[in-house]
Image 1 (cartoon, rainbow, N blue to C red):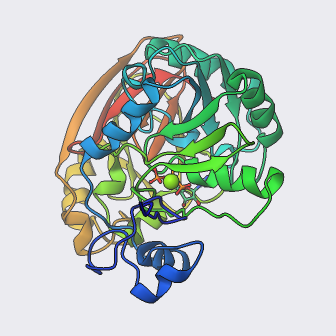
Image 2: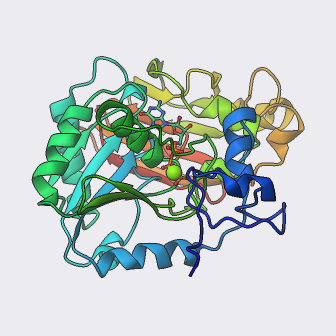
Length: 369
Ligand SMILES: Nc1nc2c(ncn2[C@@H]2O[C@H](COP(=O)(O)OP(=O)(O)OP(=O)(O)O)[C@@H](O)[C@H]2O)c(=O)[nH]1
Ligand SMILES: [Mg+2]
C-alpha cells in the first residue's frame, strides 16, 4: 500500500488533480522527499492569504483523537487576546490528559509587565473558565523568551508520552514548534505560519525521540474574532506586531474615545479617571465629547480621524452594538474588545458604554496589568 502523503508545512493530504483545492502540487513535485503544497509555498514566499474552506467539524474530529490517547496537551493562548483566543470546552476533547497552559506572544505586552502576576492572573482566569492546568508558562515564539521554561515544563509533565499542541487559530502554535525545532531540533523542518487564521490544516507529527512525538494541530476558528471582519490590510494595522505602548487618557464623564472606526467607548458617568488603552500602536485613538460622538462617527469614519478601517471598508464592518458596564468603585477592571485590545479603568467607579461591531465580544475582567 502506498502511504498517503502530507504537506510538511500544513499537514494537508497531497493531491495533483485540482489546483483550487487544498494540498495541490504539480505532479513533478511528487518525486521530492519532503513535499510542500502550493498554498504553503505561496504563504511563505508571497505572504498570501491562507484562504481555504474547511469545516469546523473537520478540526473537531482531529482534536477528538487526542482524547483517545495518553498524552500531554499543551493549550496555547494569545496573551494579547486571552479571552478571544480561549478554546472553549477543551476538556471534552482531551479526556483525562493533563493540560499545560501556555500564554504566547508575551513580546506584545508592555515591557514593564510583572510576569509572576500575569501567571497568577492566568491561573485564576483559567479556573473561572473551568480549566485546571498542571502549570502555566509565558513565552514568545517570536523572540524566544520563556522557551527554556516551556521545554522544562513539557518534559516534566509529558512523562515520556506524546505532546499535542492545541489552541484557537492564530495563537502561534506552529511558530512555537518552529522555535522549539530551531533551538532544540535537528534537520530543517519548518511549519507554515501566517498572520491569517486557518494556516495549519491537519495534524503534523514531529518526532521527539524514537518512541514519542509532538503534534501540531489545526487551530479552532472562532467566528467572533475581529480577524474575520476586516481586510488583510486592516488586519495588519489592528494586530500589534511589537510591544504595545499603553496610551493614558484622563477622562471626565461625557467624553468618548474612538479606537479608529473599530470601537467606541463612552464614559457615561463617574468621577474623572484614567482610561488606559492597550491596542496596536497603529490604531488611531480619537477623543471627543460624548454628545458629538454619533455625528462624528457618521461623518468621519474611514477618514484619518477614525481609522482603521479606512475609506469604504469602515462602513462595511458589521454595525456597532452597545454593551453597558457599571464598575463599582475600588475595583480595577479591564474592558476587553476581543481581538482589538482592552481599556483599563481607574478605580473611581464608572458607567461605560462600549460600541463594537456586532459579533465581536466585549467583556469585563479583572485587570491583567
Ligand atoms: N508578536 C508575536 N507574534 C507571534 C508569536 N508567535 C506567533 N506569532 C504570529 O502569529 C501569527 C500566527 O502564527 P501561527 O504560528 O501561524 O499560528 P497557529 O496557531 O499555528 O495558527 P493556525 O495554524 O491557523 O491554527 C503569525 O503572524 C506569527 O508570526 C509571538 O510570540 N509574538
Ligand atoms: Mg499553525
